[in-house]
Amino acid sequence: MTEATFRLRTPTGDDRVPAPAIAVESLSAWYGGRAALRALSLDVRANTVTAIVGPSGCGKTTLLRCINRLHELTPGAGMSGTIRLDSRNVQDPDARPGDVRRRVGMVFQRPTPFPTMSVADNVAAGLRATSTPRSDIADRVESALRRTGLWNEVVHRLTRSALTLSGGQQQRLCIARALAMAPDVLLLDEPTASLDPEGTQRIEELVYELRATMTLLLVTHNLQQAARVSDHTAFLMDGRVIEHGDTRTLFTTPRDARTEAYITGRFG
Amino acid sequence: MKAVLTPFDHTAGNRVYARRRRTNTVVRLALWTATALAILPLLAIVAHLMLSGASELSPALVFRSPVPVGTRGGGLANGIAGTLILVSLAALIGAPIGVAAGLFLAERHGTRLARFIRFIADVLSGLPSIVLGIFAWELIVRPTGRFSAIAGSVALGALIIPLIARASEEMVRLVPTALREAALALGFSHWRTSLTIVLHTAMPGVLTAVLVSLARAAGETAPLLFTALGNAYWSLDPTRPIAALPLQIFSYAQSPYDEQRAQAWAGALLLIVLIAIFSLIAQGVLRARHRLLHAAPRRSGDD
Image 1 (cartoon, chains in turn orange, blue):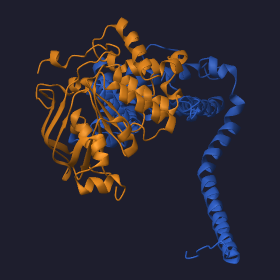
Image 2 (cartoon, one colour):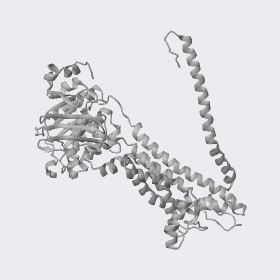
Image 3 (tube, helix red, strand yellow):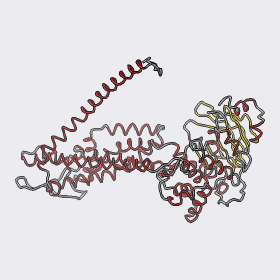
Image 4 (cartoon, helix red, strand yellow):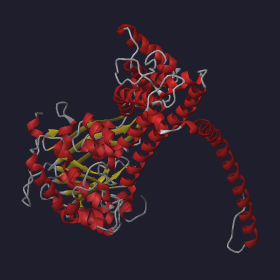
């Protein structure tokens, strides 16, 4: 895997940009002796939003962390199986983790702005670690902030500390920070868990629009949210995919009894 | 404690409440007493220094160098300047090494090498400080053939390295893992994450750790005895013997002359003031940090 294959793409506005499909094959992951994923397989179509739902501890977050290779950083953690973005194996020994992570953006459950940096520097942080020309950085910061609807709110305090923003703004700042890298894939780990309804709605609308330029995986505990924004839904339990398919079908006519029990609120 | 309160059981409720108030009063008194006992020696020392040294305090004490015994009007300016030079040079030597070691210990905290280094640091910080003086004497004084401020700074630098390393390790480990992972998820390399995100976020705490250990170094006498040596005259040359407040106190306190003994008290008072200033700066750094993190308007429902 040469560096060119993991090159950054430049954003192209609202035009549809082909993003990679994600193919997860018999992925097992563990923390020490505790298994988190058990031979999980999942095919995610390009330019879709796939919601990952399931009871706590079913491996949703671990799945995301395997895709951008954060999982391997946890002491004692390991994995086997393959994850491909189109035909490229993210675990390829020649693929540097940093290159994979630049293509696969991630947004965490709680906002994680860099506290020592200003609003603008937060968005630019990822780009500054690459060879992006200085003149491009300002443009890409602005376009990322515009896409998250944050631009008008922060345009007068771009140089203020990122911690002066509200929780919802901070989370959108983190999304902007990921978008500035123009990733092919965006992983969202319960991005609205700590937000109020209004902030949640903004992020849901954004997720819906982002399909045009990337493939998204959204971990959520909120089934209404999954129903609102996702094209497909995967239901996980005990580290396995129990059911995966079209969101509407899965929520209206689930094939598996466990899926039905979960979505009707009998457990989890 | 099996008093279960029901909304109607007022008498039982009052009994429980009264007992809790009594317990509260007893514990509070005990804690106040313990605190007072802990502070008392410090207050006694400061009070004694004030009584014995305040009479000697004068502009001359701070701005003039010593004069021959019997002449009036000399001061400890050379010692103050010397201590500041020694501490600054010690910071130049000790802070980069100490902070780098602390960062390493925090980032690799589970590894065998980190455990080994932590053990060494703990042993070093327990070492009698005169041993560090011998170390600097062997390393600098003997090869160069003379006592010097540099030799004193090496001794003090060696003294603060383990202190800074352990304290900054704690500060760096306070940086949430989530922040580190957020940087890595943007494609940052490990070293870039450590230096630009983790260390930067921990910086106010690290600076405080450095200042606190410098305050400790400023009061040390033993490491300087046969390194910086002391100097009765004004000298800022780092390659020459240099005066230091603790050394002056040490020699004046044994002097047969009343005015020198009085100056020793005043010098001790100055030293405490100097150290208090270091501590105040350290606290100021932390408070600035606190303001940055918490006082900023963070309105909810603003988005």
